[in-house]
Structures are given as C-alpha cells and as structure tokens.
Image (cartoon, rainbow, N blue to C red; front, side, top):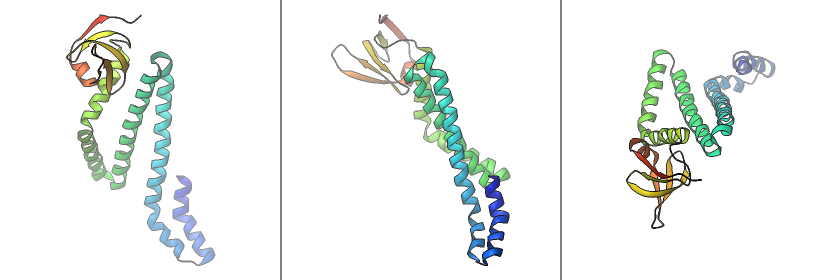
Length: 183
C-alpha cells in the first residue's frame, strides 16, 4: 500500500516530468479504485489464511466435515466484514460507519435463514449429540438412521428406505431421542 501511495502521489508526477505525457496525470483519478482492488485481494488472502488456520486447528479433533464447515463460516463472515469495512472506509467518517452498518443489516437480513442453518449446524457438529449410524428420533422423524451430518442438513434414512434431509435449525430447536448408538 505504501508503494501504491508513493506511485499515485509522487511517481506519476515524476513520470509526467520525464515524459511530458499528460495521460499519466489522469491516472490519479483512478487511485481510489486501485486501492479498493488491492484491499480486496489482500483482505481475501488474510480471510483465507485465517480460515485455513481454523481448519487446521479443528481438523484433528472434529474431523474433516466439521473443519470444512468452520472454514466456510470463517470465510463467509470474513468476506462480509471485509466488504462492509471497505464500503465504510470509502464513504469516510460517520457516513462510512452508517454505510457499513447498513450493509451489515442488509446482508444479515438477506442471509438470516442460511446463517441460522449454518450456525445450528455448527452447534450440532461441535456438540455431537448423535453420530453417523445412530438410530434417533429427530424433527418429527421416528427411528431414522443418521447417514451424514453437515452444517446445513442432517441426512437420515427412514425404515421405508426414503432419505430425508433435516434442516439443522429444526434439530437444534427440538428434542432428540437416541434409540441406539452406532458401534
């Protein structure tokens, strides 16, 4: 960022003096856009590095599916924060804070159901009230066998052979009866 700052404040003037081409000075008008692009790239790299760190920390204890879900949640929240921060920074001062808050509200309301599903799924993956292979009663389904536990849905198989995807928020909000544990 320091190199970019120097380029747009002094470097372009030096290029103009050396070449006498006025086109170089018009590049100063695009400095804000270059800063935003660089911040987005650097921000994405930081968010991805933090998400990978959390993945590496959760992988040994909770397994691949839980670690991948944590990594995805960190990425989603990080990108949201990055975009809100850049939008707020571009507007500047109190207007920036208001704009960042407004963007946060819009994104929050737009993704409310998806985020509630993902957060509920994270609680299920971390708390592990049941395992794959357990026979359980959950979300109105009786004596179903758990086939997969994801961040958004838990996949179960009924006795009649049908596969049912149960949203994670329904599981967290209701009681769970464990009829038999998998060996």
